Length: 400
Image (cartoon, rainbow, N blue to C red; front, side, top):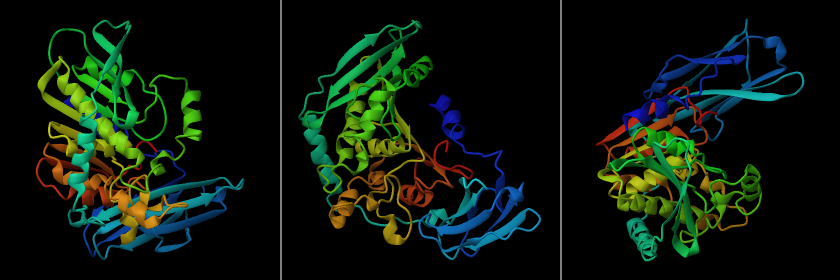
């Protein structure tokens, strides 16, 4: 597990070293207390290259509290915001060059994160609902099938995996392990958003480190087709897939995805090369959401690592803050908005957190506008023990 930590913490840090416009806050860690002020110095290297510089202050990364033209003197400007309650804030600087190309840089901070609260409570029948769905899954035989693939590196075994899932769907995955008769800790890798194939290196590199690895495609799609195949799916039947079936809790696209993770754990548990002790789940963004969900649903997970996890605080806009991707709250076109938002509560990653019994490591980007920090931290505040939160003060979402 320790071998995974350096890449988990550092690879996805966003540090724009070459920006023409730099924002420097008065506190490097960007963590404040109520009543304190975050102030930013904006440095513009070549102000004559820009025909406009606008700023916006967005508490909760949602609504704009203040905006206007940036007043620049000798290449510098200053903006401040005082926290009057626990929360988060984003400062956005936008500009246009003479050819009208637009760009932006952001900074931000959080205040009293230990006091963050969720926008809604967990539904009273939440555990009952998911117990029923797991029972639906368990009524279907796994029927796992493996196809071994030739490897130049004979120290590792690699295979494509197929399993049955609910309602006629399949789980398509890849796995790898060291090529010997020993027993190994298991690692379940779950994927970020989008429609794409799986790289063999994602499992082979971990297998070389001594893991029995399973990597699940979030969609019921082959894992190794040409890029054009996935592009076509993304433009057609899987276009905006998070909104598919989102009006009802029993039809959400995420139902089979979450249950795929549960079955993936069951697959690893029954595999002969598992050491019978350790099962770790890890992922980022949508994969971080699946990580938290899996740790909450499956009692045999022994550790979970989630980077900038999606799916937290779905009803955040009701408290005037942005919810986590997929921003389910706004996915209401031609639908009953109240039904969509009620269904979202059964898929909100935060509602799985109280059932997590294993150690969990969560990385939060303090400048993340895709999976905003306030909802993630509020969700994780529901547990105290065996939890480590890592605040990434200069990180936007993943590597963007």
